[in-house]
Amino acid sequence: MSVFQPLPLGQRIPGSPHSVACSLPTMQDVVGYEEGRPETTRQIASGYPRFVVHAHTRQLAALLGRRPELAGRSLWLVTSPAMAAALADHLGRGAPAHAAPFAAEGVDGVAHADSPALNARSKVFLQHIGGFLSSRAAEDHLVRLGALPAAAPEQLFAGDAAAEVRRVLRPAFAGAQDRDLLLAPSGMNALYASFRAVNALQAPRGRTKWLQLGWLYLDSIALMRKFTADPARDYLRLGDVTDLAALARIFREHGPRLAGLIVEAPTNPLIQTPDIAAVAALAREHGALLVLDPAISSPFNVDLLPHADLVTQSLTKYAAHEGDVIAGAIVVNPGRPDADGLRRHAAAFLEPLHGRDVARLAAQIGAAPGVVARINAGTLQVAAFLEAHPAVRQVWWALQPATRANYLKIARTPESVGAMISFTLRSPLTLERFYDRVRLPKGPSFGMTTTLISPFIYLAHYDLVTSEAGRAELAAHGLDPQLLRLSVGTEPVDDIIATLAEALA
Image (cartoon, rainbow, N blue to C red; front, side, top):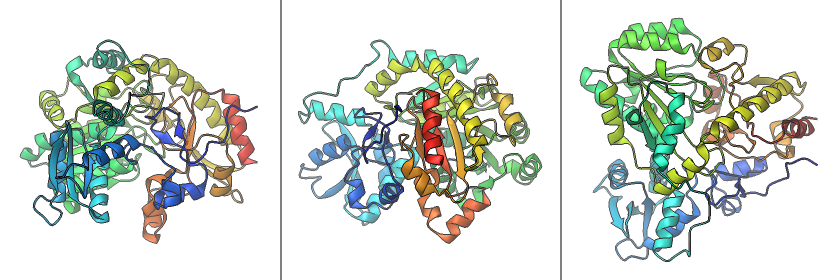
């Protein structure tokens, strides 16, 4: 019997109260989730923490909402007073929203008039920059306030948890010291702090433009599209990660005004790898700072720090491989001229990582190198199976032919491929038929011991999937709305392949 059994809608994956994924077993469920249909959303108690407000956080907000000064308001609970001030400023203090920071019962947040529009703006802002209060922090507040009897039992690291996390990460970043390894409450908060740190150094030099190389994760795109000084002027992008000639032309035209580049190595979800050394050489020649993101493969698989000014990453993937912690990190390249300034500014813009989240991360990160090796071995076999299957139209993974050579330049070994495989199907097999049939766990995130599959474009870019202009934008970047994103776990690889084969038949 297969190790994979169907999971009902909303079931936490892998099962912890703090799981970062939840089951979306059918395409109807995916659409219902994206459109906020009550029959779907009422069954989802938790999901990826920057997209679904956790049940503990909602309970804590309801408890604080009983206070007279907060009653009848929408409450957003955040990581710090600085984040509360940032959200209030974003909404407009003194505007009709009357958005105001508050601190109550040791919890920081923002209260504003209850309206769908303001709620949407608040949620998207906190999603983009990683400002939500963590589920463990909310749980600890509820216990302290007597609303919960105790926190859910889990294994926690007993010593200096932050030191343990840095100890395990340090070998992946040769030359970096503890002061160069900065922890964050999410990968997006790490990227946001990196973005702000680069701007703090580069804007006084007359550099305000940012370049996106390839198609990036949606919130990474949003940072440049929404938070550059003048997005119409300062947000640049080049879709083809292999077109060095076009990249060189952009540098010749905009070089003196370029603040930085954000590059995923490889990209999400097409898993394409630019020639990182060549990109870094252009950036250094023209004075731009290079921010590299290894989330797709993990720093255990790729070596990026020698090329980067900053490496920013999600520790939710691979490091927290049990799928129940959201965290991130910035690593400053100590050999770069702006290292001291980047270190100082990044630390100032980072939000605090809750103590129990660090302790939970530290309890599992020590096993990460071994887990990653097992995932790599499985991915090699699953990718070969999908590439040979007649029902599969196209496969993207670390060693796809178009960018294989570039990937191998940064890979620690030829087998260091990471968990992710994206693929599309041949007609007459449809996305809906395959997705509804496949018995693998279905939900967002990746880099877990649990295999996960999702209709990624629907989950990440539903607004683009459902409009003609959006579909044209996706097509221009080589993105098919029918793309599936598979994250290979550590289950027996024969079971993973057999389960895929069953649904592909």
